[in-house]
Amino acid sequence: MIGTSECMIRIHPKMIGRGTLVLVNSEHPLQYAVHPKNLAPVQDITHASTEERNMRLERTCLQQLEGLLKACGAKEQVGIVSGYRTRMEQQRIYDQSYADNGPIFTASYVARPDESEHQTGLAVDVGELTAGVDYLCPSFPDHGVYAAFRRQAAAHGFIQRYRHGKEHLTHIACEPWHFRYIGIPHATIMEQYGMCLEEYTEYMQQFTQNGPHLFKKHKDHLIEMYFVEMGAEEKEIAIDMKPGTKIEVSGNNVNGCIVTIYHDQGQAAR
Image (cartoon, rainbow, N blue to C red; front, side, top):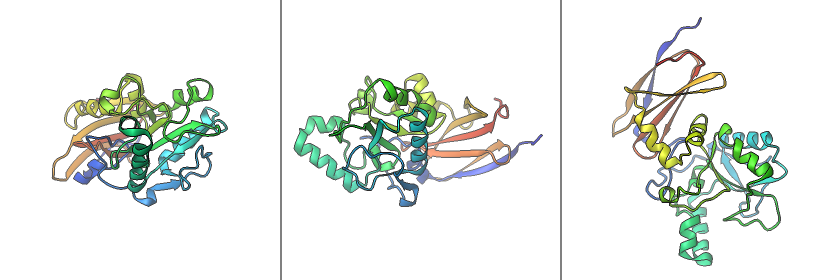
């Protein structure tokens, strides 16, 4: 039997603004642009719109999206309307919507530059593959393969980011077409409790490095999660784990980082 050993990881304050769990909204704008090497071109998924000619997504997000579409048999009915956007592209979209649709519509459906999840590469607008797709509000029905996509999204690490009833927290209208990759098991936990990302960011702060940790079973792993509050100084964290255990550290873009440890099932007990 392979024993555990202590592994030390370092968390730098700049990591607060990076990772799959970053909260990006009007109160917490994006801190860092995505490095081009972390983006991949969308080649094997049909483009539902011609607005973005060189469509890209963050690499893991794209891989998981391809798996999700395959799992629900939706590749012939569901396409990508919008993926990664640069700050300049988001500014253009915002300005055009403001001119065409006015301030009320734009405030409800189009984020200002640096407040858009699309700039992370982790957000994707999907739509029904039909003629004349609305770029800002594409059709995404609640039946058939579209409903299957929505049901299976969390199992592939995606959440419907803007839901009905959460507008007072997200400050964005319900968008059935907008999905955000945050990873597993975070997406399944959010789905289980009906939380939006604003709520989940706050929820995770009760699980601290020296306090209780959150555990979730997923397939062959027991996944351990906790929050590390960050200040101006780098922190060193000790983790008891088996050699080769996967560890992810993501900032929340607010006040700290979330550590996620993928233990072999039954390894961790607390």
